Image (spheres, rainbow, N blue to C red):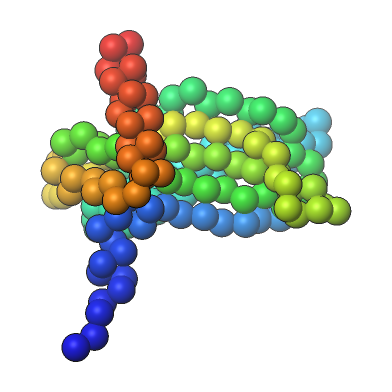
Length: 159
């Protein structure tokens, strides 16, 4: 008997995560020579979509971005890490925290938060919203993430 590790891991909140490292190129800059906010949002959207697809195992579309904050400028040649983590699910929606970190080129051990957002994605089947699987928090860290995602979700609904 073999254990399907991928199948087992796919049940955890931490499975619905995506991460990428990129080098900031000239075509990503605005006229002031720093990373264009729209380029960063595109990266956030892409990574949130991957995390959402991993969870629902189907097509997703972006519903909204909330609380986008650009914490510090990102320069040409900087190495960034984009991390998207599913935190909470509704009926057909998934809420993902996305952070972009910029690395000190001399010391990769201490990245700085450069941008953050909370992205809502919708699972679609035949072009209509479709139910997503419930999240299973299996560790104290996953439970804390779920609670934070739930609080954020409820705050958005009140607006």
